[in-house]
Length: 280
Image (cartoon, rainbow, N blue to C red; front, top):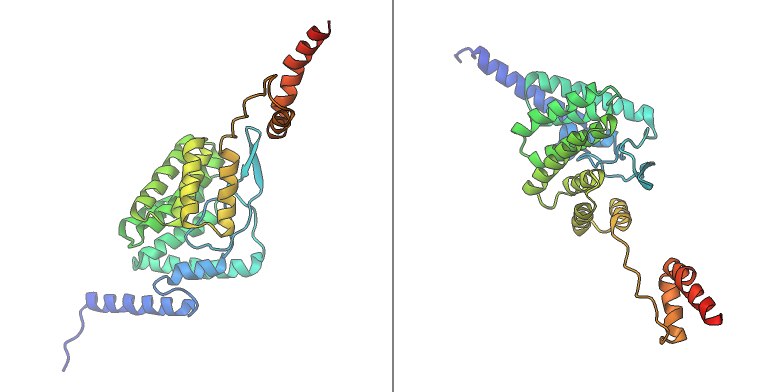
């Protein structure tokens, strides 16, 4: 006759069985080991905010905002298409994440909850605060700490724009840099680090960060956006030296073609006066 199982043993067995059930109920299309995050990626496959998230892979351009006369992607990219179907999928993940968090079964549940709160963030900022708290708890126990750090950096980037806080941008940069320290080739962390430097208007370092991203991703549409930021932030090439009177007509034409604005200013400000004095 078998001895009766202890209450602690029965509780542990129940939690294990429930965890297996929840993982299996998400669907066979989700990545192994990522039941909740895989389901959330299926429910929200497209970009929803300017920072990159660990669950999204489908690129979507963000509307632009104006900064010092220069257009940059807004942090909030607006509503995603297919809202009703997405809402059903997100609700299912929300229910599973809440149940798993209550049972304290998996750090992925905390990361998924952080992402859910981030994607549902309101203008007041309560959801973003909850999101950041969930990421804090998740990264203490997660085996994919760089992924959680990159997502938490995205949450701080979003809150920085909504609160106009430089401190939030600095926090996002610190988290993204920590993530790249753990995984130097993590494209999500590299993208968010570059975006934080871009938002902080540290243009020289931002260019280097965008180029570091392009070193690991040079072909995707995300890379196209990174390349556009490099082009926008890189200092313009210095104008060639102006021609002198002994230069040939070909040298003058080449200077005008390379620096039309400088050539016009040279003509109006100096050469026209010199010509008038020579005539007189």
